[in-house]
Length: 359
Image (tube, rainbow, N blue to C red; front, side, top):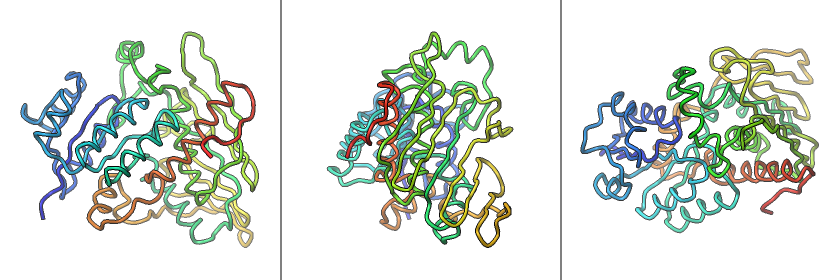
């Protein structure tokens, strides 16, 4: 069987390095080309993966036409996700876009429409979707362990988007100072800010836990850091038919959760009619309490299967089986997450409660 040809386009988000590593390690995949209009952004990937000159492009059209990929991985600034999805769909390829889904609900709908028109798959990669604690929580919810989900509480973030690069490589203070003035993470027009960067994790995986249920309205507030045009801390309260849920995102946690869990811990607490689950990022077990066993009890992490180990395995497996995407990666669930984020941003701006947008 011929290997799946993958192109990597737009290196604005450092997660591209992680995706390239996963693609390089997949036995049925071949990275045939990389592309970014700024060549310096590709230098680390070239050094790490040994791409040759004829595999490196600065013009996306030339990349598509020369390499003829089956799948394209894209990591542009959030506000350009719609543009790049449309460009990929023009070439009739399946596309994977790095989180967040988009910078706005209108852009998310633009992406969905482009994929539907082209008849191709569109996947949104939420790295936490491949995390064993969060998959374990979903599995237990599906088994009815805690009854019907009625509340989701999320706290997520890290020290900041410039403190680390691909594969969680620590950056230096000099690198941070050099990048911050020009980084899209800190530009409002590019979709920057902690709420757009991280709240989608909580609202999208939260929607997954809720079984696709949508809130009625959202009330949110953000900090207003001096000298910045974007937020670094956002708290949103969403009112569902079952009650209130909270989604909090923070750039500036005391430590990064993949090295030392900060306090508050990053992850989820899920409340059901018959029990609760706490699933924190990067742990080997989650904790559960039920009516039959009300004391908090550790449960070892067990994921949803081999293909759920990383986004490349999952996406290529869906293509091979001609199966629909499921979970946080599918546009339907990600769109609901985007609805909540958009509503939260409008609520914070208007300083009032806002009914869910896009209904």
